[in-house]
Length: 512
Image (cartoon, rainbow, N blue to C red; front, side, top):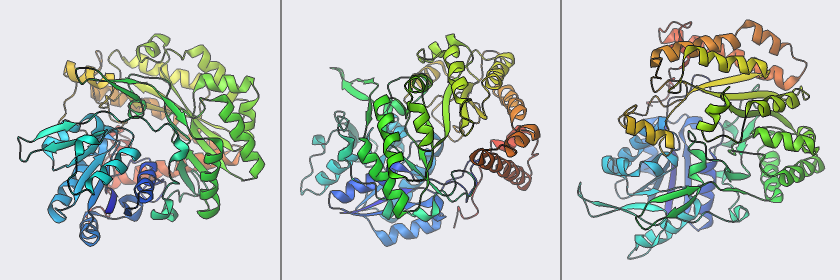
């Protein structure tokens, strides 16, 4: 069958400029590879780097005339763009089966299948489910009930019944996955920045899932172990899996030698869980002699463990130059409420003292603000912790109740949000009042906090760093700040107001 994968045109975050840092969507690369390995004719269209607007996408759909159209989206923010692709496909290529997948639709399949002409939702981890579904669709009399991990319609019209099949088991051996289909994607258009992720970057991952179950995080749920009880309710358990070091090195070499990618953005939820894997990986990178730099999301407690064993130093020698740690809150009791009690602030302080020993590492941290108990004073407490930890860049994110999380369930039950509109779920715009602050007050305090860091003194310190990678990161931030200011001016928004850095930016080619 002819299978077409699409990532829609979309507005972009003001902190990621249009031609700057589009990176490879790993889901497209892996799903396309799985479908091709199963014998299907596959095409991939990632509209953002291609600068393919809606008119061009419509014509491409007509030209491709696929048997199956696959639309993926993990972010609530862009769900409406994915549905626009579904609606367009129903109009211009009505014979094509329309599949959607990703974390957002996994958790809200009922809403979207009742409101849009979706034929199937592929739930949770997608490769094995997609291959099984394509195989069944190729039969003369498909029996969709035999395909675990999907939702489909039985009957026509508004009264059609939605059938949810049993959850699919996770892929036990990640090495069994096909090499990502990078050759089907515009690799020369990804990671083109000369500053951030220089000199050209790509995403990559070696692991899936997480060992934790933080209440605000949806990523662990997408790759969780699923058990179904007698009432049909699904119960999730955290699960972490990894490819072998050898398989991972093989993928890096593909990117390094074939596509000239030298910097890697690891999209693993928790990169450094397994100390033995980390040690072997560092040894192999050093053995190959590949000159690479890389970014990863890391766990604080695992950094402490690896430093004591002499592993972390080897990871730095093997190219680690940028990491991000989820600090989240300055109060240990709040971390426990987030189901993140395996962290505490004394541990985080020890971690950042370790990181200070490695001046070549750009230290990034995330903080969650705007929670239900937030006050202006408690928000600024997070900023004080960021200063104490000597973070190079602290990202302060308003708490966002993403579908599929306990936080979302609570927010719906209490009436803090509705299902009507997800277009502001950008982790920059406050979505809920706290008990003491309105959304507008949280937004203003957030802007004031950011001004404490992204200011001339902060930039000057970074721009004068003796480390090249750090200098480039600050040069990138300077470029971004100027770009955000210019975009605000073009939109007739006061660039010194907080709205100037939260409004998404419409690409000039969006409607073409």
